[in-house]
Length: 269
Length: 269
DNA sequence: CGCATGAGTCGTACACCGTACGATCGTCGT
DNA sequence: ACGACGATCGTACGGTGTACGACTCATGCG
Image (cartoon, rainbow over all chains, first blue to last red; front, side, top):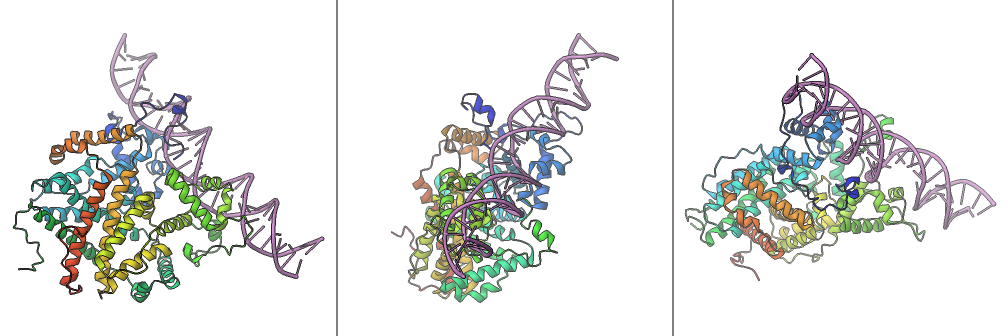
């Protein structure tokens, strides 16, 4: 915020000609001399994750974080250049929770399905992550790349060429991302039941107010629509499998599938 | 921010028993006496959109917005209860730009495809909207509901039952959402070419640093990967059609399709 | 041993944010 | 003419990110 990065300093010295700030990942952690109780990036990131999980993402301020570690606010800035950097580190640390097999199984479909489910589980465990993902942060951290690597690797060994690979992997990623985001948004709603019902009331009121013929038809269904977590998961998988079917057909039409496929559903035969 | 909604007032009166604040849409605009130069919600929202489009979403502060309208900051609060409300209004106003046919064409596939493309175009025109969408805002505005209405209407007349309808429409929505979000994130990257190349350099560096065998293989492809807007759109449509294929197959397997279908292999038009 | 060095920590200050509160102004119904 | 009230605005409070300079203190060197 404030004044867009370069403060009074760079306003003084000419203009930022060498002003491109390298990414966090290129400015590695301070060499870590073991003054036995020195802070470290890792400690800070851990504390940040804990704080966010406990009090939500908007509770993460440098001051509060520092306070939760029993430390002065500005001390953090020795280990981290800016809050945005900290957020990037935090996001990547979360991606580190993804436990993927070291190498893909060889079946692209089960591989993509696996990573989709794992990623979804991750996002549901830390709903605030999605929010940060959407905020224009580049995300080139090592753990995130591991995700990308796994996805591409499972397709690369089929010989699928780059653009098709990108399209296939990207489609799955997008679906997971969007689908989980929508669900996580619901998880971000107020926990207080009064407020929740007030919210759904406002939904109903909105339907009753405007002219939405189809929605009106389903008014009562909406009214006590309390989808269980399992049902939501089922819905997610339904769409995922539909997408994978479509993608698989395109792959095999293009000749990149060992015709063993026969994507379950068993019609036609 | 500050103190979580209920200020000193509700702290005074017992405890927030009637403390659930109704949504913006239930607290309609002030009755509008025409003191010929009075502000109005609409003016404020328009100015906000203009400001965001011009300077990005984080430039939208109540003070700056008011200043851009030649008005005191607190004047806005007569017409809008809180900044969050303003954001909801803004988001819904943008959704108003969606120009959908009054009623669905009758072919679910072209309908869903149409709304997908329209929604995507919308999000690309205002990349910051996605960001706000992901921030836990309920989104029950009239224009957003028009979107939902249209989606459901196109499926409802096939007789598709509720859960399947939700799954189908939700899958498409999720795909559009996630896919466009990923692309909009790229649009949020710095416009300065130096910073852009620095960023891609950091990407390359990251690949070279860690052990990502597949990504390393494609290192050079990544390096000068400058996808055109058309190519990105094509990729989007590729995934969209794959998804629609899979969903369509499930619909027809369940018997909800006038068997005239037989989802075009190639491209529709 | 004494001491300079520099890593690491922190207090203070600045600009900016959202918004509660109360003063104020202009117009209208009476 | 005069209250009432719709509408605007100035000020103030507690919060934010972070630049800057002062401070502590373990370590290396003489």
